Every structure is written in structure tokens, then in C-alpha cells.
Length: 372
Ligand SMILES: [Zn+2]
Ligand SMILES: [Zn+2]
Image (cartoon, rainbow, N blue to C red; front, side):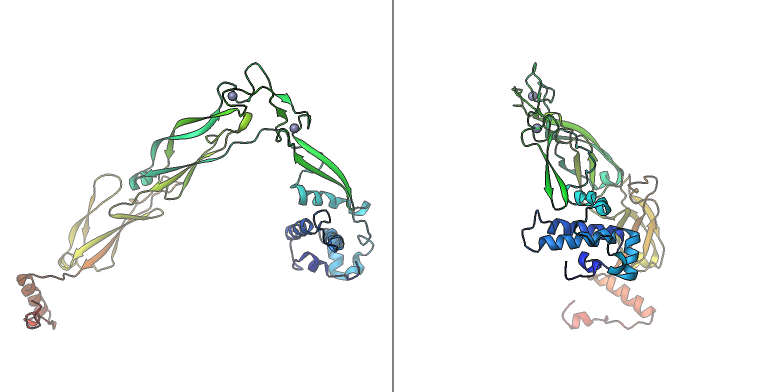
């Protein structure tokens, strides 16, 4: 370490970096530059540098000294060639973490069979069912526990035996001496695939898998307020794992059909009502479709303007998590101007315009233009 770079720069973090940011940066760099994985000649030096920076910046007291006095403030503390000497040994679990995902301290992964895969089922429901909730029976193929061997994979009458390669531990540990001291490498046992047991006489039904293909029927309850793209998770209803492994989950992905006249945004429903000029001017009654029951009749006040919104409180969609609360149904009023008029309708509108003192292009203009 001749060129003494700034320690924050070494780890590629800001001076104000949090402990978590420092740790993350260190892990990433350690994995990249560890001499066991990086064959570049500079890897050794880089790794030492990274490690030294981490030793100091991860210790609040030493970090403060470094911030105030620079390298002089921390020299002697971690500047030695052996960062894992008595002073720096606390860093070992971090190195270990960085490589093996955090199983330091004699803690061993218990040998166990793999968990089964999750499954996905696409369920189509109507608009109303999504709003009000429903129950559906679904049928799907799944790998279930083998009835012959009860999932063990061993022929009835026989039992699986302890794996001779890992002695039932399910993992193989190797200890190497490196410049950092001992490195413990833990890998799943290749013979038993981490299960710790092997099957000498496989069950004939499942050929030692412990599971068989079958069709399962389930009732799925779809809560009110569910929406397109939501998933209902049924834990333990996925595939079972091989040889007694726990089952995965079943995800029911919900697809909602469109409604003829209503649209939905979250808990809110929208209905577009078209009124004529006369209806908007004079008022009218309007039938609005709802998802639960008969259409409801509402009064439209005389003089209703285009773009008016009439809100029917509580006639929208229930909140998924708070089913007692419902959104609203919004009636959006559109006023439609007629494009075709009978002769009499035109006369009436012209009379209306005359009464209001309005200038209109009536009075036979259309006939003159040949549009009548
Ligand atoms: Zn079987
Ligand atoms: Zn084994």
C-alpha cells in the first residue's frame, strides 16, 4: 500500500455514508477483489486496501478519528499487514457474510429436503364478482405427496439411509488457509443434494421422487374489491417438494372482465350519462346501472351543465382491506347536441333562438346551401 487513497474513495462512498452503505459497499468490493476469486495481480493489494478502509470506517470511534486527523489519527490501529490480527478479528464475520450470506459462528444449515415450487393459476371473473367478492372452484394439475411412500421416496418397508458423503449433514465444509486466515466454504452435498439422506430402494410409484402428478380441486374465496392483476396467495397449495419437502404456494392471478357501461378506478366507479339539450335544460330522471341489484333512478336538476358530476356515495367498490368502506359511483353528465333535426324540431329551435334574441344560421340557410 504505497499510494494511500482516501478511505471513503476506496470504498466508493460519500463522507456522510451510513454504516449500512459502508457495509454494502465493502461487501460488493470484497466479492469483486478477493484474491481467491480475482486473478488480477493487483487484486491482493486492492483487497487489503478495501479491507483496511472498512476496518476503520465501520468502527465509529476510528471513523471519527480518521475524519478529524486523517490517516495519522488511525495509524497503527489497522495499518499492519494482517488486518485479522487481534485488533481486526471482528471483521471476519463480515468477510464471511460477504461470501456465504451470513452463517457464521458454527451455525449449521439443517439438512432438509427442498421446498416445492409455487404455482400460478389465472382466474377470470366478472366485473360484478370483483366488486362484490365471490367463491370459485378451481381445478389444476399439481405435484402432490406420493400416497404409496407417504412422500419419503423410499419403497414401503424400506427407509432412506443417512448420506455417506456428508454424514447426514446435507452440506460439505472445506476449510482453507488464505491470507485472511481460515476460510470456510460450505456447499450443499452433491450426493444427497442437501437432503442428508439417500434412497437405496426407490418407491415404484414415484420413482423415489416422493411426489406424483395429480389434479386438485380447490375452493378459492375472492374478497370484495379485488382488481385486475391482483393475486390471492394460498400458502401450502403449490407443489410439494421432493421426498417430503414442504409445499410451495399457489398464486391465483385474478383477471376481471370489463363492464358494458361502468368503468372502475380502484374503489371508484364511473358512469357516463348522455342527456339531450332539452333534458339538461328542463331536468329529467336517469337510470344508473349499479353492480349490486337494480339500476337506480336519480333526479337530474333543470339546468344541468355538461361535465357535471353526480356522486352516488357508497355505491362504488369496497376497500379491499376495509370492506365496510366503499367508494362512490360517479355519474358524469355529457350533453349531446343533436346533429339531425326534423323540420318541426328545427322550427322549434329557431323559435327558441328568436325568443332568446340569438342569431342562428336557421331560416332556410341549410336549404340554400343544399344541406336540407
Ligand atoms: Zn412414492
Ligand atoms: Zn449428503
